[in-house]
Image (cartoon, rainbow, N blue to C red; front, side, top):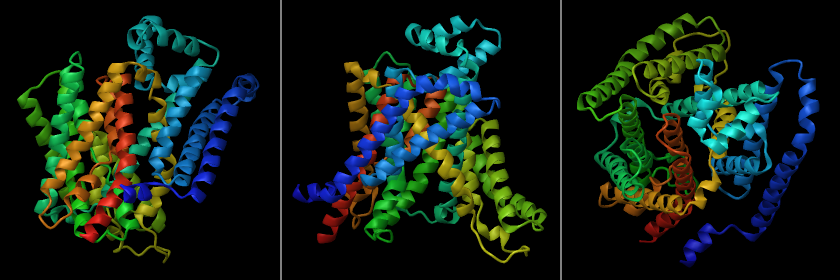
Length: 496
């Protein structure tokens, strides 16, 4: 226990500056909320260009994302946690203070569904009350029907679109780091860990929601269950690197299992989404989804290289940076669109694009310049800007007041227990000479992948505000617990 405490506890020298930094950030947030009403009118009068409010709104969200990332780094935590928690603070302070843009963003996809129905001719008030409920509807109607309602909706739509782009680029980079060759080399231990790590959390998650919230539809139950099966191995990989364990047997099993976990999780997401969209459990429909997913991935893996070689030959006369950037962007966007066209999530197309694309396709061309730059370094600036917007937006949509309901807290606790046990059990699938506890802890953090699943569920209307808040709490806790516990497990394994 003392060893665990020493591992998890920051040093006093690093803690005090971190506290001052966090307090400074919170003070800045309070100041911005306080002066916002006074500045709103004069700033609106200066906006001659209709895009100016969009620039200000998106930049403001990114600014708070940077503050959250800075605070997380100061406290020695993953960046995703800082951005997510900053979004939670931002959204709930706006709720109590009355920041119109954040109040609209707080409602998530429901706002855009409301706008879509209103444009189609449905009465705005009727749609708002049926979609959002009486109290929220009155607040949203006041904002949308006000003098700046159009601008606020435009900014909210832009932030939502940017966050979706961020998710696509994030999954593309995950695929880029995981080549198809590595997937074929995944051993039996990694396969067993991945299967157990998806199936067991799914069963436990379904049982928890069915028992604790029997009033939910089975669609909600299976989507929450699918969310628990996700794994964010990026955080684990960072811990392994810090301990110089990236070449250990445990690292090979964890990273190999993460590859299969991603594929199984995305396949499960496709099946669950198909069930929800079709409105029922139809074996033929499920088989169709599975076949489409397999054919899509297999088709991309087989035909993708031919398409890439042809594209690169056409772009050989361009600059190397231009050729790699244009090819990467077009390839990932086309595959994301095609995935959606066949009924899969866009992130499946983005992940598959990353599996196929690599820098070797560009070696046969003689470009006018002789310097070298890889695809990952070209795409990463886009990901660095857009992904934090997604995490802040997810945090904004967490409604703390939903935790005032005791049942929601019980469900959140149940999901957390199921999430932890479900991944710890998967360590049993590792080999006999492997540190099984370390493998289970390495698969435990949900991070960005769990948030993506939850966001898709919310957009489909099967995850309520309360459930979404419970899922985000599960993501935060599992992501916080995993790094220090994994360090302890690896260090103890060394001594034994």
